[in-house]
Length: 317
Image 1 (cartoon, one colour):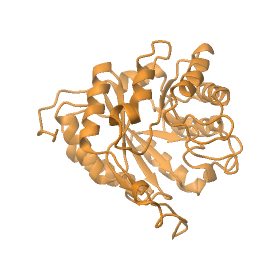
Image 2 (image 1 turned 90 degrees about the horizontal axis):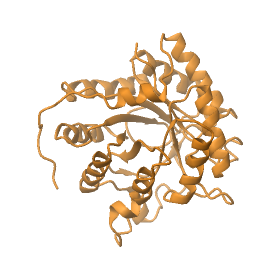
Image 3 (image 1 turned 90 degrees about the vertical axis):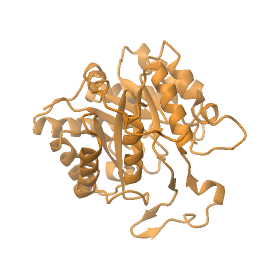
């Protein structure tokens, strides 16, 4: 079986109250990334955070660069990529407003950025816990109630990533996102692309976060991809039960997929463990399934392998 790519959702918006080990400052982030790499991680996704308050700094080029440079100075070649801002102001060019820092980091030769993030559609920002809407879910200001990723923006970003030879890490939150993604890929966009299936118990989107939910995505993928070879990552998110997270990860490994762990994604299920400890646990799961953890070189080879596909239709400009 092919080597398993282990991605880490390093910090996201997790607070110290949720997990005392969440890294926030550039030095903490860099140290945690190096520890995860030593434990067997292949890819790191992280959010820039205000070093003093811990608040999100999703588009802060300087904070991302500082953390990534510290990783490189430590001699670590792990693959890393940032997040981007969730909202459009309508006042600036949307690519520069939301993705300017990603492109700046990609153009910085010292960093070796090889992956760009892209969420493949819009969705309602609704969260729940234990069967009840969380406060604010139905009283959020209208302009911040929908996470918007319109098709013209998706097209532009895939073109930007293709022009730089980046791997597009395409996040799928709903079945419709996958259908759109496969049409865009078949049309020649996203020459190097990978899918990331988010299965969440906290965010009210997508199929249920269990093996059947993952299988629903995989059935669609088998029907839609044609001859294209494309890798996928199972990303449990907002799940409180450690056993439920483990069940999803083991199922993904058995289905020859890749996996994502991290205190940023499931802080409650992490139960006080560090990111590197979570990596060690999933490495053990992978080896028990007959798979070794992928190196950065393994991942680049897998994520850039593709077959030629015919044009399956034009995407609206």
